[in-house]
Image 1 (cartoon, helix red, strand yellow):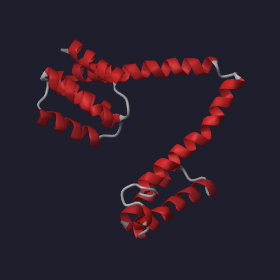
Image 2 (cartoon, rainbow, N blue to C red):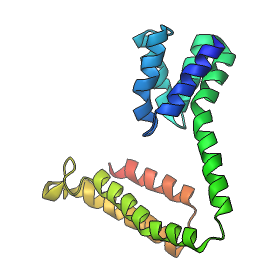
Image 3 (cartoon, rainbow, N blue to C red):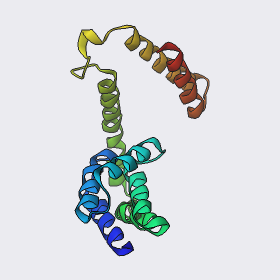
Image 4 (cartoon, rainbow, N blue to C red):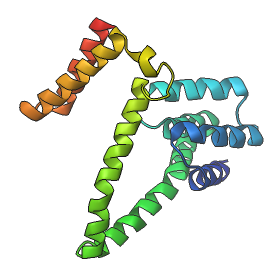
Length: 181
């Protein structure tokens, strides 16, 4: 059973990409294909995994493995889903370590900064509901949108001006959101 769990989750870790939620259909197909869990048991495990800190895919693999074969199953499923990513990260790190003194690599990495910044900004704009997202456009300009912008502004100001620790900023903005919303 442990070998089957390890191989199933290795396959998931190797061929699935796109974040935790994107991996869930692959996990479900493997689990149901092997007859390890019912749909209800799978849904319960994923619900618990979603409430736990960390990646839902890793948490789900661990919980499903535990449910199937105890501690050994949890270990096999977790190693299986994480090992392909770990190997890839080590290989990429080795490449970057060897290229660390290359001017070409430094130029490439510096040129990625504005692109990454814009991608993060784009994601933030989409999450705020501006520019074609749900509730976007002029309809998105309501008191919750304005309050959200004020919280963001306060966070940026506090971190830049007063060098506040990010955890403190997260807790403060969360409490402010609870009070306002």
